[in-house]
Image (cartoon, rainbow, N blue to C red; front, side, top):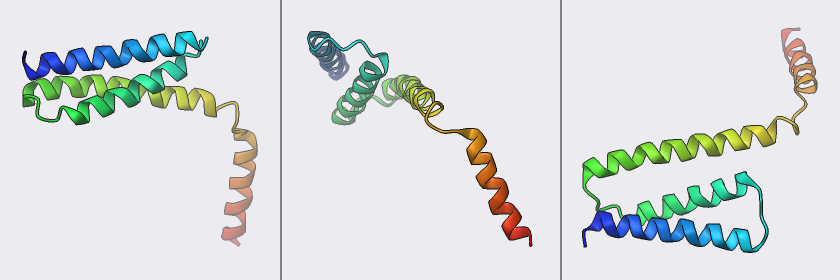
Amino acid sequence: MKVFDTYLITLTSAFVGTFVGLALFNQHHLDLYLSFFFIEYLIVTMLFTYIHPRAYKLLNITAYLFFTGFIGIILIRLVPIVDFAQLATIFESTTARYER
């Protein structure tokens, strides 16, 4: 069995194990699944760093997609917490203080 085949089997097993585990604990949050998958992807990819460089470049595309989804979820969760009108007021008062 080639290294890349072992990598795919390991990654698939990790994803399926996480999926089944979170489903057993009755978790229905997409951000939780994506976070776990992203972390597992990074760990398994770091363990298989000796993959052929061409295959590694293709795997980086997957990493960029996971990272984009991860940042998207963080932004979606952050927007309701941060009050941008209040931040603008704080920023204006701070810059006005330095202009004097």
